[in-house]
Length: 170
Image (cartoon, rainbow, N blue to C red; front, side, top):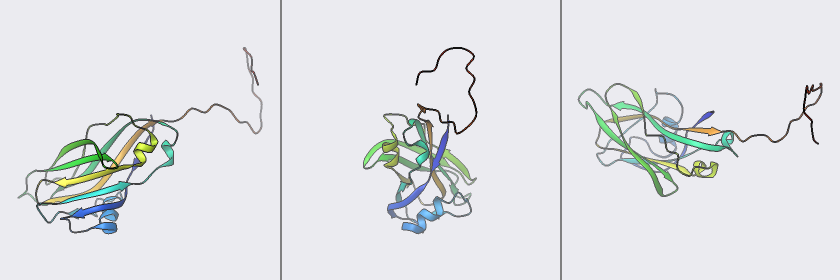
């Protein structure tokens, strides 16, 4: 089944990070682990909206997985949890605690598959809340697994079709 990755395109709120707004989004949506944001306050959170992708328009959405790439600031912070909450607008759909160490890794929540449609996916927002100071967030993204809509017709501009048996009704 095909998948597509959607990335944040706007920040609705942020507090306690070294970047905010468009700067925060540009660092966590660029598919570049060399750019990042660091939380600078023990009470920190950002909320981001996601771009839409025409690839799954009209499709059946099988599931989505939210992933974060990051690490702790250094070896003095041996492990740090980050709460990730997937929302449809303001309603919480799924929450997961992702654990990070000083080694960069991509951590993911469980696959979410309840009542998904393209319009639900288009309304996704994700809240990211570290448990304490010392996390480096490099990427946030959602992998959308979908089944493409079936086509009900064929179009030929030239050539011939050979039908060894059966019939064609037009």
